[in-house]
Length: 138
Image (cartoon, rainbow, N blue to C red):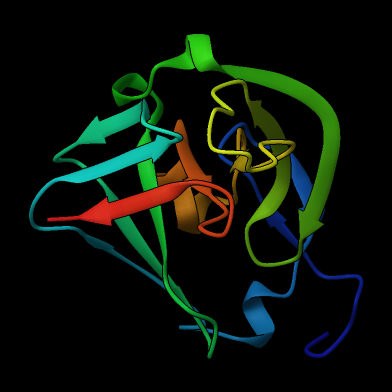
């Protein structure tokens, strides 16, 4: 049923969700990041890692995903906001509580808690809106 909106794909947990992965093979590519990635907001450290993953998706700018284990979760608060991507799955969001720079940290961080199996590498990782937080790659 190529091209149909009713195709499904299996998530890491085994759930079957609507997906367009089969219609667009190779649309998303993951690669490890060589070097250190730091994430801050208003001088407050949010994450520091040498284990980041770069996600390339079609013509969109690449996005860095940082392991949750390398983030200071005490400066993040889970929100009720969620979105759905037919290529990655359901995203949940966090707000940054470190707003000393006058930036809005509301829903500035997202995570795919149960991504499609093809993207299992981003499970337990966080991504950041770079217009709200500072992401630096060294």
